[in-house]
Image 1 (tube, rainbow, N blue to C red):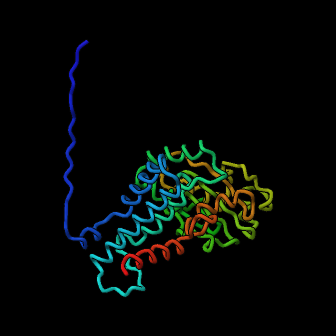
Image 2: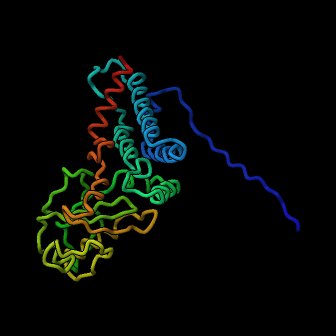
Image 3: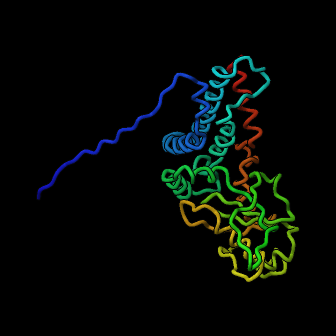
Length: 282
């Protein structure tokens, strides 16, 4: 046997600056979020979930504290100052803390947690962002007639139960799981058009396919799902009726809300970060 051994060298040039203002102005929150999530997954192999959460919170506090000290001196102590490029970082960091690959939970098997950890390790940035902050959009108000074409997704709402109206149906999508949440007073006509049943309690919660029915509501829902960006894997679909057995699990994906005693809401986490910054400054 014969052959050649070759070494491939890849060079990368990265800009360097001592100007903190420029650094924060050009910071990419999506790249930083992806790095922090994957770093947290790696740390979770050797450290407890509590230690990982403390590490993430400390990092979030530190880079916001540095911005305050280097770029926003003289700001009143009672004011939380966030760089424009990273103003949503507390939201994403809190979502990382609540992610099942980090937080686990008594209702999660070891196999499920390992699967999620390995899934995250192979994710691209465009996959990570909806995983941490799912797309939530109303779908019961839209219709597509046969002569019409739909090219854009419905307007998104915030991932919080405060923004779910129980007279509507919503898609909640994180690129891995897709929930169709149906409010208890969602119009009977929409339920009939989409699922072919007369009331929500007749909907099969185990159904993973949306029936292909020839009407405006059904076409609109199926087209909305088609327009969703491609995920890292084939989405698993769950139909969730308000107050049904699947709803508590689905609500974990409404990441701005408090979920369990150990996971803060976005607002509570923001207040906690603010307090930690104030403690370090004064």
